[in-house]
Image 1 (cartoon, rainbow, N blue to C red):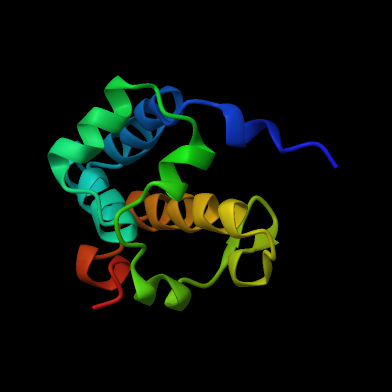
Image 2 (cartoon, rainbow, N blue to C red):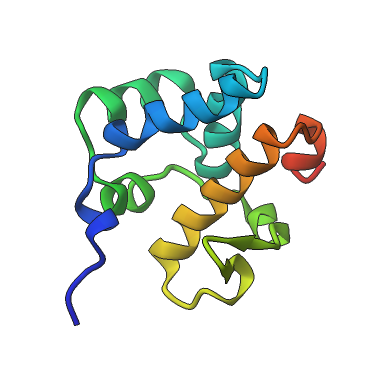
Length: 116
C-alpha cells in the first residue's frame, strides 16, 4: 500500500496553516508552538530547525525527542475520523496535532488542550 501523501509533505508547508487557523480565532503562533512542543518534545530551537530543514511529516514525528504520553487522552473527530481509532501511528500523531489546533481555534483553554 502506498504511503499517504501527507507523510511526504514538509511540515513547514502545513505549519503556516496551523498558525492562520489559530490567529483567525484570536489565538497566537506562540500557543500553536506550545502545542507542538508539548506533543513532540521538541524545544523551540529544534522546532524551528525542523521547519528550516523542510522536514516531512513522517520524519518530523519519527525524530520527535519525546512524544507526550498524555497524547493518548486526545479524543474526538478530525476530518470525520475518531483520532483514538486511527491504527497507523504516524497518521494518528498528525491527527492528534490537527485536533489540538482545532481545539485552540475553537477557544478551548490551553491547559485543557494540553490535558493538564
